[in-house]
Amino acid sequence: MHRMMSKSRFSWQLPRKTNGAAVCKRRHPGVVEHRPLTERQAEQCHVYLLVHKDEPRFKIGVSSKPLQRVQSLPESGQIHLENSLQALFPSRVRAHQVERALHRLLDGLRLTVLDDDGRTLGGGTEWFAIEGLSYAVNILQNTPLSENGDGVVTLTRVSTEEQALEEGQRPCPRQRRMRREFDAAQVNLAHMNQIVKALRRLNDDMNITWRKAERGSKPKEGASEKVKSLLAVVHGELVCLHGIKDIWEPEILPLRYQVCDSAFWMFETGKVQADQRKRSWLKRIQFDWKDKSTLLLCVEDRSVLQALPGGRAMLRLWDSLWAS
Image (tube, rainbow, N blue to C red):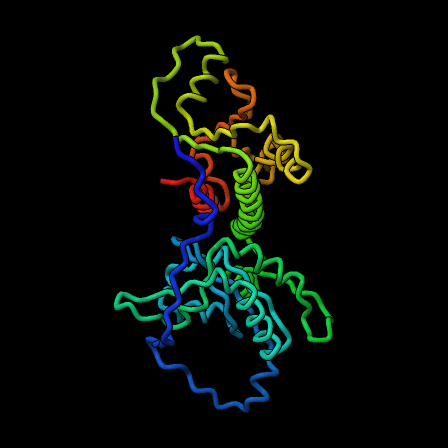
């Protein structure tokens, strides 16, 4: 049985900033632009959010052609193009303004990416922890296109949208499915952040424990549903909220109702069928039969959760709650 981590360990473990200035070294020299500065600044430009495939981080940057920018990065093969976004602004000046604003607002989640020799990669200081992605998306969606407040930002996918424009093609069924899964992943990550924050807040006023899944014997054929459910509780991943019966403070009461509501634990699947669009994070919610003041949250199998859009990132957020 593990206790939820103390408040001092809730945040992502970000690397400490060094006193000296980091020197960014690019692998290839940049292309020299011979056009006038005023002409370059007036051209349309994107602010992009590039999501890493294997690590919980994303990159915020500016480029007139984000897809080409991805290909020039040292980690180009590790960028999840289907999950990466871009927003087109009428000028490079405006795009840089928005990029700097995003960097300032998410500075607490900034990461420094180093190469094998311990040196900062080119653009290695533009990476942020993945939990800031939903905030960056919300900020971009509410940012006007111009400084005068005119126009609304439209977010598109870096790969599918740009390639479709270049090739003059309509999105194929596979691209539409990837879009649905990406949208579902963003919704799921934002919702998992809400769940994590709710449990962290409740942990200040009660004792929350977690027990990882244990292998156990399968129920015999013909066993009743009650026996099967009890075995699932015994051998499955379990979260116990001790003392929730006595939580009636006005500022805590909404959180109590949320965690007891099955709808609060539902996530998007990215599927079209109406009866398959949602999947629960939990197998069941019930009060302990021995201690009625303890709420039991029986977590679904991890293979099921990992198959959800954004499942791996959500599991990392979930695991960050518990002490090792």
